[in-house]
Length: 193
Image (cartoon, rainbow, N blue to C red; front, side):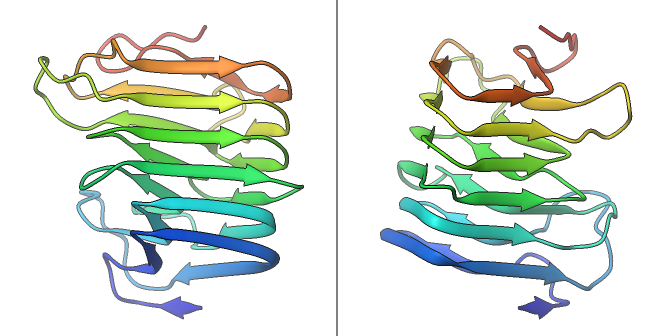
């Protein structure tokens, strides 16, 4: 699917959705939005999304624009993404998954590949330090691969807070392959772990 309308998702899930044995591809062909106020996503997930041997990719050209394969977004309700059985989440020019956490937000990688310039961006969007959204990334298997914005800056996982407390932000890794750095801090003083 292709379109040139800024601020749209190809698929929006607010319930329970399972994608199995196929490929979903989306490409935004419009002008870039350097303020990142309007993003285009292959899937905007605000419910429970399960991938079973499925590929979700965003093939938007590199530009100043938010374009993610999956926007796991808990702005309105709990969001859960489960990746199983050799599934792939791909974005060659931007981040593969944005984990946008206002409320409870969970990503579980059991098997498969998540690959983008950053594989997963764990984003706490509010500037209210009294809020501590429950944000969990669990890697039981599979691969997180950050291809990088540059040769020396390749992040498999990047956490960032605009001011929220990161008290309830958790990364659990029990198995799998991590190709790239895991940045456990965000905001003003970024450091690689």
